Length: 406
Ligand SMILES: Nc1nc2c(ncn2[C@@H]2O[C@H](COP(=O)(O)OP(=O)(O)OP(=O)(O)O)[C@@H](O)[C@H]2O)c(=O)[nH]1
Ligand SMILES: [Mg+2]
Image 1 (spheres, rainbow, N blue to C red):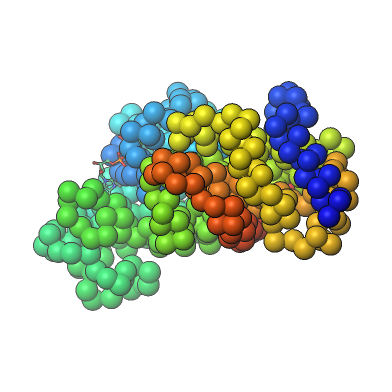
Image 2 (image 1 turned 180 degrees about the horizontal axis):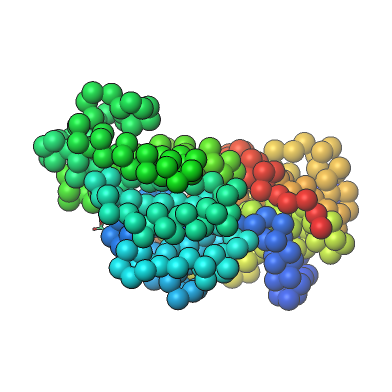
């Protein structure tokens, strides 16, 4: 495999000493992100209706992490980029103060004009004083009748009779009229809220949830979360759920806080690599993808509080050997994709390779911390499995989100 060896050496060199400047990389990432606009969810709801809890349930982040990440963007709204501004998979706009003073959505509307992909209205299931929320929804819906609307009815157990009653399993709120086990008052209240939205002429999707705290004693703690994801997937069909959901069993040995923190960054870099590889401009090719991967490796290392020096990087990449490049492709296909370094590699291939590299790095650091590095063969096996997983996770997202060039 003379060609293979040569190619491998060249990749290794490019990885160790990136051949794109920071500036070029930034510019390409910017272009890539324009083609793959991050989904934006605009949350509207009264104070204490459960907006932050909803972000927490969807992202798996803690309340403190969300609090630290919220940035003011207009007088009445804050933005939360997940996992952060630069490596963003999902953006939430959180509108404050509805119901306290009169809220005029026009400034936010102007600011979010081209941004919102989904309007999420958060209402407590038993709260019918929704005048300010309804006014705002009416105003926004008039300006953007094409934006899908999702109404999330929270704090379900406040309507249980008695309130200490456990959650109904299976989830009975997916069909109307609600089955008889749903407490009468709650059923009536949920339906009344839905009728109010319908009377505004808004075709909304509804989902009922109860996102409690462990100490509240309800099981499950995030009741209705799968149903919430189903509704989101229906309204914004991008495969976000498949991408963000943790494959818990598959990564049992990684189930630690570092890994949880690293995962959204890995996904974000994988998407960026996929998007960059799809841009038909001359310099966007292997060097850029490798540049993105190098950046990701440094991010992961800092999450694991590990140093990523040349020796380590060498250890990792040579451990992966040709597997890193070939992934699941046969060498024939590989040569088609990368006849000479410098030609454009396929988008999904770049994304999946980036994902697999990031995940493998998590395994590597996690093993270092627990003592005992994986052997070469195991390392390559992990990488190959992650490559498959990355492809499965990212395929839908990359194809559906992509805007036509230009
Ligand atoms: N039982 C239950 N409690 C909830 C639910 N959603 C939110 N809460 C609780 O209600 C309180 C307010 O929730 P948040 O998610 O902070 O509400 P918010 O809309 O972000 O509030 P502000 O940011 O103050 O406007 C917290 O104590 C939550 O734990 C829910 O679905 N069920
Ligand atoms: Mg909040």
